[in-house]
Length: 317
Image (cartoon, rainbow, N blue to C red):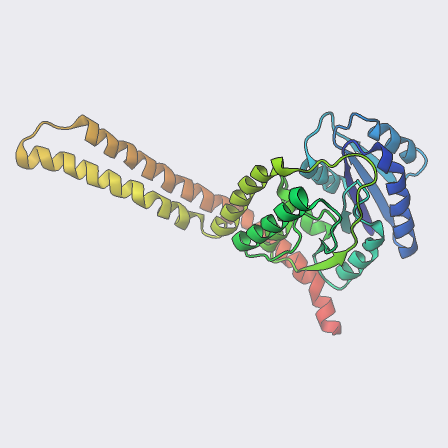
């Protein structure tokens, strides 16, 4: 199969029918073998029933249902897991993303890119609650991860299926897909896309998500920075604990041996505790190093898949 279009849905009953029609009208002229996956993220307004009624008439549409609301990233991950296309396109279910842009995403994937990111350059959202926080978040994500993307929050993206299926997604991690794929050496590009004002339903985004994004950003920074040399970084973290342990134990024994003072159990206990912490950190580093070396085979595989995709094109050029 050439293309899978993945759309997470949460209480979007009024948008389901026009969204389905817009996707079909955009993809059908491309002449590709495609499927549409609607992932109902625990909707309570009849979204699942509306989508299922369409799926009963069109075998190209598949509907996945969550028993409760798990969030956009979980819904997106479920769609990716069930998708069978060589190219995967994700988008929002509120009709703010335009399915007509799918054709240019397919074109860029055909040019050899592994990931194509949409940029809502004329964003139709509220300034205070959506645009300004988004600009700050995008700037911060770029500084922390080193991957400069103007619109990390845009759900309209295209991926090579064999790449994105090996990228772990959880919490709000869909925003950090460019940073995660950069570990595997993916080629990515950002293109301008259209963005429409919401006509039906209410927005599921708000300022309450900021703290989740900040926590996930910390996780991503840790993964990107520590992934290649976990033992080194754990050793650096262990140095202060080791210094405190040595200093306190030395002081305790020095007092006893040179001044015949009473052995300080409290000070020595602090030294033992920090010594145990040092040992645990070093042990964690060793285990992480083993995990990385084992998992590195998967990253090498992803890099090989990327090279395998690009090499033939290099020869043609």
